Image 1 (tube, rainbow over the protein chains, first blue to last red):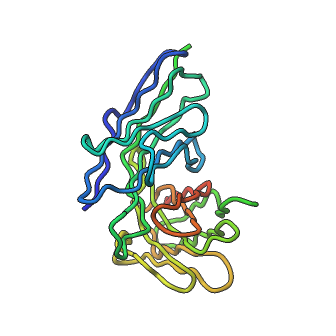
Image 2 (spheres, each protein chain N blue to C red):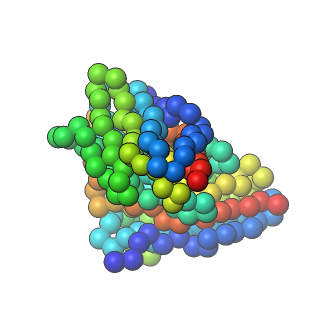
Length: 117
Length: 114
């Protein structure tokens, strides 16, 4: 069974500091991987995705993530945090192994990012 | 191109009543997914549908919950005889295909059972 673990339910950074949100997956076949952001009382917005090819993926709002198969990780980074980045971030994995569970996403528990002035 | 639409945005039901949640996917998307978000938890998959077919309902509770995606009209998630534990945010997502295609999420329906 596939699982996604986000280390750290809360991360706090200063404005202008590096943002690092950790995500590890557990799957017999490397899955498709996604990062979503959720602002209060809103739906999820896709930040970036990894399917195949280049392992460093760039997304919106200056975020990027690197797929590391050897570490089963897909950590999200941003060089310089803005106040507007404060939100909850979810890592998700999509099944790459076929079968009826082909479509569903498995989400991590989420990481709340706080940005201090 | 309008995004995924969900209505109502907020729904209050008394214990024992029925809740109907609606989802209209993005234009051109034929795959619909429902997820539930409980307080301080991530999203949990409930069901995956294509037009007139349930593809994967492995995340649906065995009783009281049902979903459909008819040939015409929105996808419906129905919860019969709601209980307080059903209070949650229910999100619908759609995609043009499966797996490698990202899912686009609606704003959610926040169900409160009193």
